[in-house]
Picture 1 (cartoon, rainbow, N blue to C red):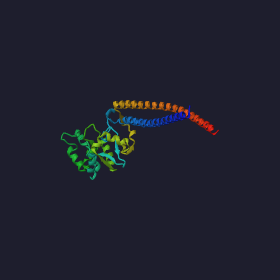
Picture 2 (cartoon, helix red, strand yellow):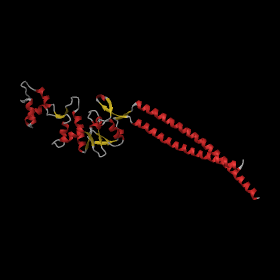
Picture 3 (tube, rainbow, N blue to C red):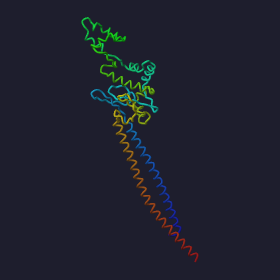
Length: 318
C-alpha cells in the first residue's frame, strides 16, 4: 500500500475513532439522564403511596370502633371514649377551634373562669340528692317537718345547721358535673376533658380557621412535614408531646385503585428505562470493541507509514 493510500486510510480511521468516542460520550450523557428519569419515576411512585389518606379511629361503647378521615376537628373534638389529643404549633401554642377561642376569651375574666368554661360546654354542677328525698316524704308532704323545697332553700342559703337532722338521717348532698347533652354521657369524663383543655389553653393557644380545622389535607400536610406537634393529655391532665407516627389511633388507608395504577405506571416506566439502559450498555460494549480494533489498526498503519518514510529517507540519503 502506497504512502498516500496509507495516510488516507489513517485519516479515515482517525475520523471513525473520533465518531466512536463522540457516540460513547453521547451514550454516557443519555445514561445519566436515564438515572435522573429513574429517580423521578421513583419519587412519583413514592408520592402516590404517600398520598394515602390518614384515618382516625373513633372508639365507642363495648369496644366498638369506626374510622373517619383525619382532620383537626375529628382529632380534638370531645368523645368520651377517645383519647384526648391536641395539636400545637412550633411555638408551643395549642391550636383550638375558633369557637373554643371565643369561649375562652368570654370566660377568662370571670370570677371562676374554669366553671364558666365548663358550663359553656353543656355541663352543670348538680346533685340528685333533693330528688332522691321524695321517696321519704310523709303523708303531709314533708320530711322531718320540712318540704323538699324548704330543704333546697335552706341548703342554698347556707343554713346547714337547720338541716343537720335531715343530713344525719338521709345523708348530705353530693354534687358532680352532669352532662346536659344526654343521660348516657359521662359528666365527669367530659368535665375532665374540658378542664384539661382549659388548663392547656392557659399556657398559650392560637385559633385555627374553621376551613382548615375541617380540612383533612391541612393536618396531613402539617404532620408529615413536621410543622405541628401532637400532644396527649393523660388521666392526670398532664399534656405530653409525641410523634404522630406512634399514635395507634392514626392509620393510613390507601386508595387501592390509585395505588394499583401508580404501581403499574411505575413498573412500565422503570421497565422502559431498564431496556434503554441495556441497549446503551450493549452499544457501549460494541463501541469499545470497535474502538480497540480501530486503535490497533491505527497503530499498525501508522507504524507502516513510519517504516515507508524511513526507507524513503534512506534511499534519498544514499
